[in-house]
Amino acid sequence: MRKAFLFLLVVLLLVGGAAAWDAYRFLHVPPEQPGETRLVDIVPGMSMVRISGLLERENIVSSGQRFRIYAQLMGLGASVQAGEFALNTGWTPRQVLDVLTTGRVHLHRLRIPEGLTWWQTGRIVEESGLASFENFAQAVSDPELLRRFDIPADHAEGFLFPETYFLPRPRNQDARPIVEMMLEMFRRATDQHLWPKGRPDPETVRDLVILASLVEKETGLAEERERVAGVFANRLRIGMRLQCDPTTIYGLGPDFSGPLLRRHLDDPGNPYNTYMHAGLPPGPIASPGLASLRAALQPEEHNLIYFVSNNDGSHTFSRTLEEHNRAVRQFRRGQGR
Image (cartoon, rainbow, N blue to C red; front, side, top):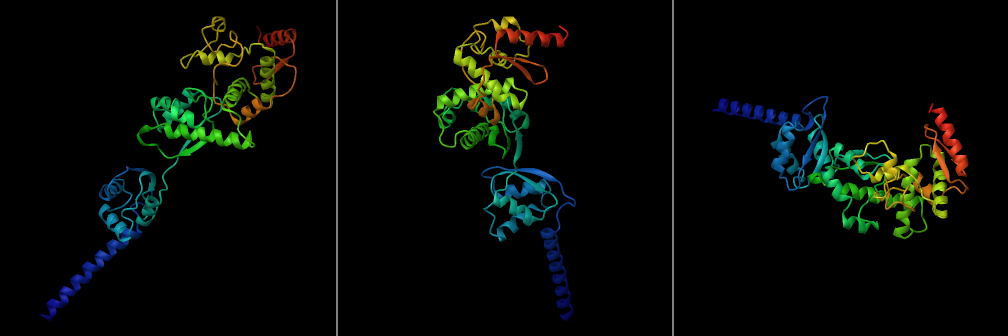
Protein backbone atom coordinates (compact mmCIF):
# COMPACT_ATOMS: atom_id res chain seq x y z
CA MET A 1 0.00 0.00 0.00
CA ARG A 2 2.83 2.34 0.89
CA LYS A 3 4.59 1.62 -2.40
CA ALA A 4 1.39 2.33 -4.33
CA PHE A 5 1.02 5.66 -2.54
CA LEU A 6 4.62 6.62 -3.27
CA PHE A 7 4.16 5.66 -6.91
CA LEU A 8 1.01 7.80 -7.16
CA LEU A 9 2.80 10.70 -5.49
CA VAL A 10 5.68 10.44 -7.95
CA VAL A 11 3.22 10.35 -10.86
CA LEU A 12 1.37 13.39 -9.55
CA LEU A 13 4.63 15.26 -9.06
CA LEU A 14 5.74 14.37 -12.56
CA VAL A 15 2.40 15.36 -14.07
CA GLY A 16 2.30 18.53 -12.04
CA GLY A 17 5.87 19.31 -12.93
CA ALA A 18 5.20 18.73 -16.60
CA ALA A 19 2.11 20.93 -16.44
CA ALA A 20 4.05 23.61 -14.61
CA TRP A 21 6.82 23.39 -17.18
CA ASP A 22 4.31 23.65 -20.02
CA ALA A 23 2.73 26.68 -18.36
CA TYR A 24 6.14 28.26 -17.87
CA ARG A 25 7.09 27.65 -21.48
CA PHE A 26 3.78 29.09 -22.70
CA LEU A 27 4.22 32.27 -20.67
CA HIS A 28 7.92 32.84 -21.28
CA VAL A 29 8.92 31.14 -24.54
CA PRO A 30 7.51 32.79 -27.72
CA PRO A 31 6.24 30.61 -30.60
CA GLU A 32 9.17 31.71 -32.79
CA GLN A 33 12.63 33.19 -32.35
CA PRO A 34 13.32 35.44 -34.09
CA GLY A 35 9.71 36.42 -34.62
CA GLU A 36 7.98 38.14 -37.50
CA THR A 37 5.31 40.83 -37.43
CA ARG A 38 1.83 39.97 -38.65
CA LEU A 39 -1.25 42.15 -38.96
CA VAL A 40 -4.16 40.70 -37.04
CA ASP A 41 -7.64 42.19 -37.37
CA ILE A 42 -9.87 42.01 -34.30
CA VAL A 43 -13.41 42.66 -35.51
CA PRO A 44 -15.83 44.51 -33.19
CA GLY A 45 -17.92 42.03 -31.23
CA MET A 46 -15.48 39.14 -31.71
CA SER A 47 -15.56 36.71 -28.77
CA MET A 48 -12.47 35.78 -26.79
CA VAL A 49 -12.79 32.22 -28.10
CA ARG A 50 -12.53 33.47 -31.69
CA ILE A 51 -9.79 35.95 -30.84
CA SER A 52 -7.61 33.34 -29.15
CA GLY A 53 -8.21 30.91 -32.01
CA LEU A 54 -7.16 33.57 -34.52
CA LEU A 55 -3.98 34.28 -32.55
CA GLU A 56 -3.11 30.58 -32.53
CA ARG A 57 -3.70 30.24 -36.29
CA GLU A 58 -1.42 33.22 -36.91
CA ASN A 59 1.18 31.64 -34.57
CA ILE A 60 1.10 34.68 -32.31
CA VAL A 61 0.51 32.34 -29.36
CA SER A 62 1.24 28.62 -29.16
CA SER A 63 -2.12 27.78 -27.58
CA GLY A 64 -5.33 29.74 -28.01
CA GLN A 65 -6.97 27.97 -25.09
CA ARG A 66 -4.12 28.78 -22.71
CA PHE A 67 -4.07 32.38 -23.89
CA ARG A 68 -7.78 32.69 -23.17
CA ILE A 69 -7.32 31.22 -19.67
CA TYR A 70 -4.33 33.50 -19.06
CA ALA A 71 -6.34 36.58 -20.10
CA GLN A 72 -9.19 35.60 -17.78
CA LEU A 73 -6.83 34.98 -14.85
CA MET A 74 -5.33 38.43 -15.44
CA GLY A 75 -8.83 39.93 -15.37
CA LEU A 76 -8.46 41.12 -18.98
CA GLY A 77 -10.62 38.63 -20.82
CA ALA A 78 -13.20 41.30 -21.67
CA SER A 79 -10.68 44.11 -22.27
CA VAL A 80 -9.35 43.17 -25.70
CA GLN A 81 -10.13 46.01 -28.10
CA ALA A 82 -11.15 45.91 -31.73
CA GLY A 83 -8.80 47.03 -34.46
CA GLU A 84 -5.90 46.01 -36.66
CA PHE A 85 -2.84 45.15 -34.59
CA ALA A 86 0.77 44.52 -35.57
CA LEU A 87 1.65 41.49 -33.43
CA ASN A 88 4.90 39.57 -33.44
CA THR A 89 5.36 35.79 -33.31
CA GLY A 90 8.39 36.42 -31.10
CA TRP A 91 6.34 37.99 -28.31
CA THR A 92 5.24 36.41 -25.04
CA PRO A 93 1.51 36.17 -24.23
CA ARG A 94 1.92 39.04 -21.79
CA GLN A 95 3.25 41.32 -24.54
CA VAL A 96 0.45 40.28 -26.89
CA LEU A 97 -2.23 40.86 -24.27
CA ASP A 98 -0.74 44.24 -23.36
CA VAL A 99 -1.03 45.49 -26.95
CA LEU A 100 -4.54 44.11 -27.45
CA THR A 101 -5.92 45.61 -24.25
CA THR A 102 -4.32 49.06 -24.53
CA GLY A 103 -5.63 49.64 -28.05
CA ARG A 104 -2.27 50.26 -29.70
CA VAL A 105 -3.62 49.60 -33.17
CA HIS A 106 -1.35 49.49 -36.20
CA LEU A 107 -1.03 52.82 -38.01
CA HIS A 108 -0.67 52.89 -41.79
CA ARG A 109 1.49 55.53 -43.46
CA LEU A 110 -0.30 57.57 -46.12
CA ARG A 111 1.72 60.23 -47.95
CA ILE A 112 -0.22 62.84 -49.94
CA PRO A 113 2.07 65.22 -51.90
CA GLU A 114 1.22 68.83 -52.70
CA GLY A 115 -0.60 69.69 -55.90
CA LEU A 116 -2.78 66.59 -56.37
CA THR A 117 -6.39 66.64 -57.52
CA TRP A 118 -8.98 64.84 -55.44
CA TRP A 119 -9.03 61.93 -57.88
CA GLN A 120 -5.24 61.57 -57.79
CA THR A 121 -5.47 61.56 -54.00
CA GLY A 122 -8.24 58.97 -54.19
CA ARG A 123 -6.07 56.68 -56.28
CA ILE A 124 -3.27 56.87 -53.70
CA VAL A 125 -5.74 56.01 -50.97
CA GLU A 126 -7.04 53.06 -52.96
CA GLU A 127 -3.52 51.82 -53.74
CA SER A 128 -2.73 51.95 -50.02
CA GLY A 129 -5.54 49.46 -49.42
CA LEU A 130 -7.18 51.74 -46.83
CA ALA A 131 -10.35 52.58 -48.78
CA SER A 132 -11.85 52.18 -52.22
CA PHE A 133 -11.78 54.96 -54.80
CA GLU A 134 -15.58 54.91 -54.99
CA ASN A 135 -15.89 55.43 -51.24
CA PHE A 136 -13.33 58.24 -51.39
CA ALA A 137 -15.29 59.95 -54.18
CA GLN A 138 -18.41 59.84 -52.02
CA ALA A 139 -16.59 61.12 -48.94
CA VAL A 140 -15.15 64.22 -50.62
CA SER A 141 -18.72 65.25 -51.51
CA ASP A 142 -20.24 64.37 -48.14
CA PRO A 143 -22.59 67.29 -47.27
CA GLU A 144 -22.15 66.81 -43.52
CA LEU A 145 -18.35 67.03 -43.74
CA LEU A 146 -18.53 70.07 -46.02
CA ARG A 147 -20.84 71.84 -43.55
CA ARG A 148 -18.75 70.93 -40.54
CA PHE A 149 -15.55 72.28 -42.09
CA ASP A 150 -17.19 75.41 -43.57
CA ILE A 151 -16.49 74.57 -47.20
CA PRO A 152 -18.95 76.59 -49.33
CA ALA A 153 -19.05 74.12 -52.20
CA ASP A 154 -20.37 70.69 -53.09
CA HIS A 155 -16.88 69.23 -53.06
CA ALA A 156 -13.75 69.25 -50.88
CA GLU A 157 -11.29 69.75 -53.76
CA GLY A 158 -8.40 71.92 -52.58
CA PHE A 159 -9.00 71.27 -48.88
CA LEU A 160 -7.49 67.75 -48.76
CA PHE A 161 -4.36 68.94 -47.02
CA PRO A 162 -1.12 67.41 -48.37
CA GLU A 163 0.71 65.70 -45.54
CA THR A 164 2.09 62.36 -44.38
CA TYR A 165 -0.62 60.74 -42.29
CA PHE A 166 -0.50 57.81 -39.91
CA LEU A 167 -3.91 56.29 -39.38
CA PRO A 168 -5.62 53.04 -38.45
CA ARG A 169 -7.31 51.06 -41.20
CA PRO A 170 -10.94 52.20 -41.49
CA ARG A 171 -13.67 49.58 -41.27
CA ASN A 172 -15.32 48.37 -44.49
CA GLN A 173 -13.07 50.46 -46.78
CA ASP A 174 -14.77 53.59 -45.40
CA ALA A 175 -12.98 56.68 -46.73
CA ARG A 176 -14.87 59.18 -44.59
CA PRO A 177 -12.40 59.06 -41.64
CA ILE A 178 -9.54 59.65 -44.09
CA VAL A 179 -11.16 62.69 -45.70
CA GLU A 180 -12.14 63.97 -42.26
CA MET A 181 -8.51 63.71 -41.14
CA MET A 182 -7.32 65.69 -44.18
CA LEU A 183 -9.92 68.43 -43.68
CA GLU A 184 -9.06 68.66 -39.99
CA MET A 185 -5.36 68.98 -40.87
CA PHE A 186 -6.18 71.81 -43.31
CA ARG A 187 -8.08 73.63 -40.59
CA ARG A 188 -5.37 73.18 -37.96
CA ALA A 189 -2.48 74.13 -40.27
CA THR A 190 -4.16 77.26 -41.62
CA ASP A 191 -5.50 78.39 -38.24
CA GLN A 192 -2.03 78.09 -36.77
CA HIS A 193 0.10 79.48 -39.58
CA LEU A 194 -2.08 81.72 -41.76
CA TRP A 195 -4.71 83.38 -39.60
CA PRO A 196 -3.88 82.91 -35.90
CA LYS A 197 -6.03 85.95 -35.03
CA GLY A 198 -9.15 84.57 -36.66
CA ARG A 199 -10.30 82.64 -39.70
CA PRO A 200 -11.76 84.71 -42.57
CA ASP A 201 -15.26 83.98 -43.84
CA PRO A 202 -15.66 80.71 -45.79
CA GLU A 203 -15.96 82.37 -49.21
CA THR A 204 -12.72 84.31 -48.67
CA VAL A 205 -10.96 81.14 -47.56
CA ARG A 206 -12.17 79.28 -50.65
CA ASP A 207 -11.00 82.06 -53.00
CA LEU A 208 -7.61 81.91 -51.30
CA VAL A 209 -7.48 78.13 -51.79
CA ILE A 210 -8.40 78.54 -55.47
CA LEU A 211 -5.59 81.05 -56.02
CA ALA A 212 -3.14 78.93 -54.01
CA SER A 213 -3.97 75.88 -56.12
CA LEU A 214 -3.01 77.81 -59.26
CA VAL A 215 0.26 78.87 -57.64
CA GLU A 216 0.94 75.26 -56.63
CA LYS A 217 0.44 73.95 -60.17
CA GLU A 218 2.36 76.75 -61.91
CA THR A 219 5.37 76.92 -59.61
CA GLY A 220 8.40 74.67 -59.79
CA LEU A 221 10.63 76.75 -57.53
CA ALA A 222 9.74 77.59 -53.95
CA GLU A 223 11.23 81.08 -54.22
CA GLU A 224 8.87 81.96 -57.09
CA ARG A 225 5.59 81.24 -55.29
CA GLU A 226 4.95 84.78 -54.03
CA ARG A 227 5.95 86.24 -57.40
CA VAL A 228 3.59 83.99 -59.35
CA ALA A 229 0.83 84.79 -56.86
CA GLY A 230 1.55 88.46 -57.45
CA VAL A 231 1.13 88.04 -61.22
CA PHE A 232 -2.29 86.43 -60.73
CA ALA A 233 -3.27 89.11 -58.20
CA ASN A 234 -2.28 91.85 -60.67
CA ARG A 235 -4.31 90.25 -63.46
CA LEU A 236 -7.36 89.92 -61.25
CA ARG A 237 -7.03 93.54 -60.15
CA ILE A 238 -6.95 94.93 -63.71
CA GLY A 239 -9.61 92.52 -65.03
CA MET A 240 -7.20 90.55 -67.20
CA ARG A 241 -7.86 86.86 -67.80
CA LEU A 242 -5.57 84.55 -65.85
CA GLN A 243 -4.75 82.39 -68.93
CA CYS A 244 -3.54 79.55 -66.74
CA ASP A 245 -2.97 76.23 -68.55
CA PRO A 246 -3.45 74.04 -65.43
CA THR A 247 -6.99 75.34 -64.91
CA THR A 248 -7.96 74.37 -68.45
CA ILE A 249 -6.35 70.95 -68.02
CA TYR A 250 -8.28 70.41 -64.78
CA GLY A 251 -11.55 71.19 -66.53
CA LEU A 252 -10.82 68.50 -69.12
CA GLY A 253 -11.19 65.91 -66.38
CA PRO A 254 -9.24 62.97 -64.95
CA ASP A 255 -9.00 61.10 -68.26
CA PHE A 256 -7.18 63.90 -70.09
CA SER A 257 -3.51 63.07 -70.66
CA GLY A 258 -2.52 65.83 -73.09
CA PRO A 259 -1.24 67.52 -75.03
CA LEU A 260 -3.09 70.79 -74.47
CA LEU A 261 -4.09 72.14 -77.89
CA ARG A 262 -5.35 75.45 -79.21
CA ARG A 263 -8.87 74.04 -79.52
CA HIS A 264 -8.83 73.34 -75.79
CA LEU A 265 -7.84 76.93 -75.04
CA ASP A 266 -10.56 78.27 -77.36
CA ASP A 267 -13.33 76.17 -75.80
CA PRO A 268 -15.79 78.33 -73.80
CA GLY A 269 -17.65 75.19 -72.72
CA ASN A 270 -14.91 74.42 -70.21
CA PRO A 271 -15.78 76.51 -67.12
CA TYR A 272 -12.17 76.14 -65.89
CA ASN A 273 -10.76 77.60 -69.12
CA THR A 274 -9.24 80.84 -67.85
CA TYR A 275 -8.31 81.79 -71.41
CA MET A 276 -12.01 82.21 -72.15
CA HIS A 277 -13.46 83.06 -68.71
CA ALA A 278 -12.42 86.01 -66.56
CA GLY A 279 -11.70 85.85 -62.85
CA LEU A 280 -10.87 82.85 -60.74
CA PRO A 281 -11.97 79.41 -61.94
CA PRO A 282 -15.10 77.92 -60.30
CA GLY A 283 -13.06 76.01 -57.72
CA PRO A 284 -9.60 74.84 -56.69
CA ILE A 285 -7.72 72.67 -59.19
CA ALA A 286 -5.56 70.83 -56.64
CA SER A 287 -4.69 70.73 -52.96
CA PRO A 288 -2.05 73.40 -52.30
CA GLY A 289 0.56 73.10 -49.61
CA LEU A 290 1.05 75.60 -46.82
CA ALA A 291 3.72 77.54 -48.75
CA SER A 292 1.40 78.15 -51.71
CA LEU A 293 -1.45 79.10 -49.37
CA ARG A 294 0.84 81.62 -47.68
CA ALA A 295 1.91 82.99 -51.07
CA ALA A 296 -1.72 83.46 -52.11
CA LEU A 297 -2.43 85.24 -48.84
CA GLN A 298 0.65 87.47 -49.12
CA PRO A 299 1.57 87.78 -52.82
CA GLU A 300 4.66 89.69 -53.84
CA GLU A 301 3.93 93.31 -54.73
CA HIS A 302 5.21 94.16 -58.21
CA ASN A 303 3.98 95.28 -61.65
CA LEU A 304 4.55 91.98 -63.45
CA ILE A 305 1.63 90.47 -65.39
CA TYR A 306 3.28 87.80 -67.59
CA PHE A 307 5.52 84.81 -67.09
CA VAL A 308 6.82 82.04 -69.30
CA SER A 309 8.37 78.73 -68.28
CA ASN A 310 12.10 78.21 -68.79
CA ASN A 311 11.47 74.46 -68.82
CA ASP A 312 13.62 73.93 -65.73
CA GLY A 313 11.04 74.83 -63.10
CA SER A 314 11.84 78.54 -63.23
CA HIS A 315 10.07 81.33 -65.14
CA THR A 316 10.89 84.58 -66.87
CA PHE A 317 8.57 87.38 -65.68
CA SER A 318 7.58 90.43 -67.71
CA ARG A 319 5.74 93.72 -67.21
CA THR A 320 4.56 94.21 -70.79
CA LEU A 321 3.36 92.05 -73.65
CA GLU A 322 6.37 93.15 -75.69
CA GLU A 323 8.76 91.93 -72.98
CA HIS A 324 6.79 88.72 -72.68
CA ASN A 325 6.88 87.99 -76.42
CA ARG A 326 10.62 88.60 -76.41
CA ALA A 327 11.02 86.12 -73.54
CA VAL A 328 8.90 83.57 -75.42
CA ARG A 329 11.01 83.95 -78.57
CA GLN A 330 14.18 83.56 -76.55
CA PHE A 331 12.81 80.41 -74.92
CA ARG A 332 11.86 78.93 -78.30
CA ARG A 333 15.31 79.66 -79.72
CA GLY A 334 16.80 77.82 -76.78
CA GLN A 335 14.53 74.87 -77.60
CA GLY A 336 15.62 74.91 -81.24
CA ARG A 337 12.19 75.93 -82.55
